[in-house]
Image (tube, rainbow, N blue to C red; front, side):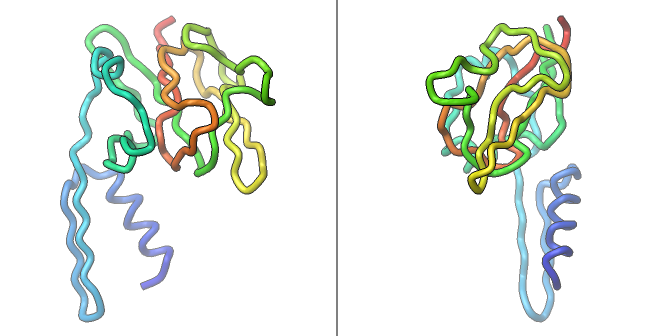
Length: 153
């Protein structure tokens, strides 16, 4: 089995409602278990502290998923790559955005440095920044939530 097979398998598992998957062949055995997706309430977000350890326990949401609560709908901006998160274009410069700012599609929210390349991460929606989930200079993983945006503004 090749690398592409496993990539495709992971994509299918991430987008499916399966919580357990097993594959056995004469050469190997693969077992995958994941927690079912859950809705995060605004109160829970305020209580949680975000650290690298949180994301190692698979508390991340799948890419391009909105978080719905009874009172609002939050859009999650996730890291498209592994790297280092920076809130500002340069040390000492003001951050691209702050909590409470209104952003537009295409507006730069942060930079993720990967392999000495600075990648600008842009908003794909119009809305208000409700929460910045990562501290400046912290490492981020692929698919890790970075920002929560209220699109009901």
